Image (cartoon, rainbow, N blue to C red; front, side, top):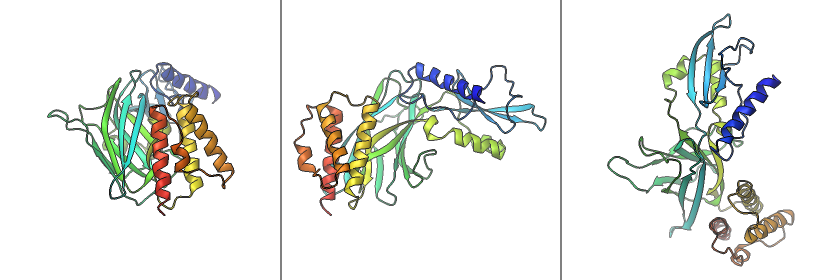
Length: 324
């Protein structure tokens, strides 16, 4: 059992070594598919395997005596290297207007064919759209609410809003695309964004899924959880209602700030970042400590994109809370 875990970690590190993404070090939930195809020494209830270097899943359907009868291949979508910038403004009717620019770094091994965000405040207005470039051959991305959940994330109560690329319009490595927008009643905070690659092999069809024994299908769904199948980032998005508690807002922005720093999306030597982190930590430890939009207005951001994005979002949310 220990050997299986070690081999799987090695496989994932091999992916990371190719520079595909920021968090491809995540341990796979399944063992490696052996090169000789012999799985007779593995438990009979192990159906799903990680195949390298193809970086896809193999589902092995076995007979009652343990012989492999057939194999089903399912693509993995995590070989992308996304980054996102967000600008947020307030509409005359009070709603918040989010505009996103998505990049796929040149190190990516796949085009981005879909990306989604998880909004934890359920039942509020959230309207995704795409206003970017279109043509006769590229009708543009489709923004919509998804009725599925993001598997494997910690919060069960959430709604998913996603953008799907047209058949010939996925975001290639080294490219950036703007035009992803959201109008919402919710003020900005950090939400989970997940980005999926467009694989070269066909996706699983409904017939493929129906052909799997129930335990094998359940195991594959678990393996295709968000944590390994896509690349996730904390991004600015619709997060807070007007009655949100100040400490929840502060904790959310502190978490987002530290996530950006951990992923090198914001520099360690940034003076505004250090001041923000210190002030947010202090405000959480001392609830009577003043932390407001006026204080934020005094920060000097020196034109740095990330700090400006972060501070402007906080100002909007704190101002929104002030209208209660």
